[in-house]
Image 1: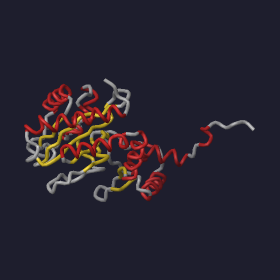
Image 2: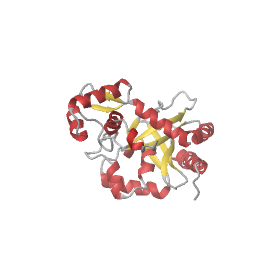
Image 3: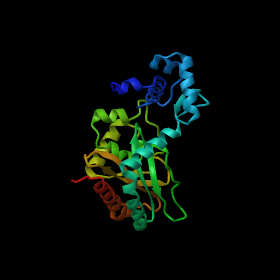
Image 4: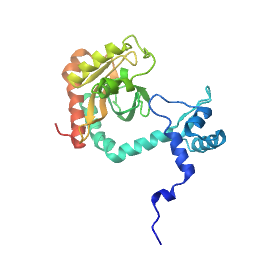
Length: 260
């Protein structure tokens, strides 16, 4: 009996469901049934059934205000599983724990997803006054240390894809919202090899981040230290926190096969 090609085993409904999930990319975070029907060239009834199935398993969720659909938390869980399997979290966890012992501030590992960063892991300080952990949260790349250090090495063309199409939102008085000013700032970040969030996302919170590279020399994430601005003085940043986070980034990168 002749061996069948793998394409003969493809289940059309599963293929359509994956096509639907892949419509949510870049700046497209929400879509309605009509738009999905046009994109997928499927009848609205079929699209609705696909959405209902994916929603029941938390791969898709509905925005109750707009009635549009967006990716659900299950997609993030799958992404985190992939990251774990490729070794980033496994290799970075001991480094984060050692980093907290050295500076007693909260440490994170984050990756870039579209125009946002997603915190994948955190080790908290035991100090009473601390930053609330944000594992799984999506924050803008342009006003976070972990985001800025990852987009700083991009070309102008690549950077345009990672910056908001519309006007950049001002979260605090320190948020850079002019693209030209941000690009100049990112050039400085790339030159120095680390980024500082100087209360740009949250008033009273500072953060310093360094890149994580893999064996291909590509930046695949960032390690960061975050805490109340009252403890993140300029002197402490310069003498202690910046050297520590840069060292941690290099250590994780080395574990992932990166060599200068």
